[in-house]
Length: 473
Ligand code: SAM
Image (cartoon, rainbow, N blue to C red; front, side, top):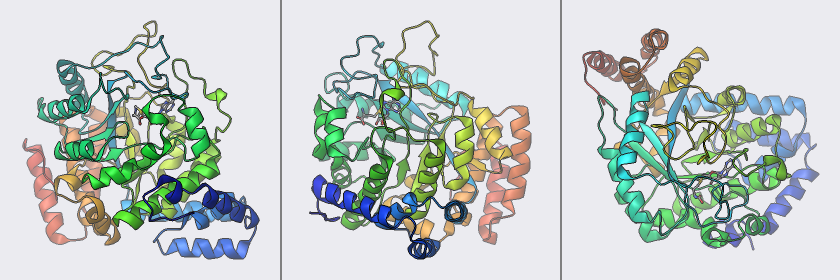
């Protein structure tokens, strides 16, 4: 029985409700009166239900899709402005006891190089990341209570936050590790993490069990209920995602939105972010082995529909996607991207050579440097942001959402983006990037509506030039 408020996975992600939703969407895919009314509702910028959004996903009318894209662009501008936040993944360990059939870290893979960073290795990795200009990381690890116990993760977080190299610092560590206990989530919260990210992979229980045949991750309910435990442990910001390609995308899309609705219904706050990874080639993984790969067109449509369905939820695109695809979906509602990522363990300090046995989780499609990504974003009209202010100012969960809803972004996130970009330009940028960035900052400072905030932002930018760092609103 479907119940968004239930704490049982099979009730808040009800298979029956998803199937009925898909049937309803099929029956109404050409019901233009209904489709128009849903698009009208989305224009109010308060989001859509999984049923409404599923109807739009089923609709193939070009004119309606165009309207959806335009609306997604508008909502992105209204809530996120033209900022794009940058981050990098940091792989701590690829030891893993699970059997995920799409992931080369699965236990039976004897070919991949197994690596785990020591705290000294982490210092080297983080120093390399700081030397690029990164301020925000997402740490990644396989599931292995012997090799990667929670104590190891906590110690690593402490190490990461402690490293101050030149003007560098990691100011926000997001964590993408396997589902765990309330007690461990509380420990992560106390360690000062930003978002806890966990991809559902697939919401389809039967497929989930087949795709995770062995190991603790096999337990669908334990995995699906993880965000509730994380929130019970005090983590306000959680990041959802499905791995597109494993199951039918329309099923996943409905499940994803139902999960968001569930978090809102139970905890009063929806997901902080949604990621949209697609299965990629990796060591012993061939994406063609999975039947449900989605085209770039469908991918773009999903991004646009996520944007209009959950306007206050950030959207993340990783370097699994190429420059071309990233360029296409950026305006449709993406708020965060990774840059210059390495998915190998230890790959920032010591990049793997092509003839080495790899430790990487998947092939990266966008191999540009962070400077190239920053430069490209600015040429496309975006403000690359290294801001980490919100959670450091306690603006997490519904307090962050309130900022979004009150449209205070131009007086807060916008100047923060400019100040952190200024730091990047001073400390790490190439000459050309710096030149473009300085002109962009001069232009954008003028767009701050509140005169006092504008004045303060001018002063901070000036002080950054003088060598001071880490200002924030
Ligand atoms: N082990 C943790 C877990 O179970 O959630 C951490 C996550 S893993 C390091 C990060 C994510 O990478 C996975 O959740 C999965 O969605 C994704 N991933 C795994 N194999 C992939 C592949 N071949 N292509 C693209 N993404 C993949």
